[in-house]
Picture 1 (cartoon, one colour):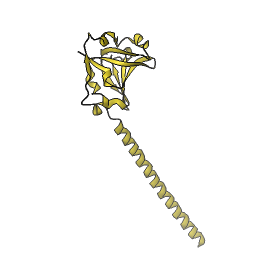
Picture 2 (tube, rainbow, N blue to C red):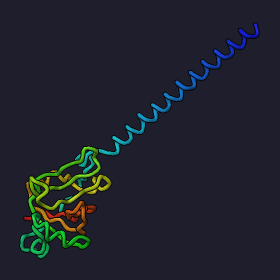
Picture 3 (cartoon, rainbow, N blue to C red):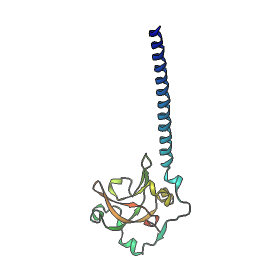
Length: 166
């Protein structure tokens, strides 16, 4: 009889432990779903969060900024400006969005390796108008040249860094 009570108590304890494990794993699963939902919401596309009120500025080809800007294909000239403020000009061929939504790369040649790029991080998406609207347009990009794996680029943080050429 004593052995039967001990067996029954052990069986009850096993059931309680199993229920606790199920509840704990359900909580973990719920947290994982919540976290992944929050992450996907925080990584909205730039088009979804683009400013509807901010507009890109314009400039003429006769402006000093345009005349002093490097051609977007002048990779060698840009490499000498890494760490310094400067500008480059060219026709934007594509706004390439990373799959994870963390950034957009503005390309100035269908073969992105042959031209400079400008990079927009997701934290700044809402500050800018829809950058995909720049495709096929000549623009000037200003800012500090930075190095990314041996290639110069400009990181965008303010829409004033982009000017449409009239």
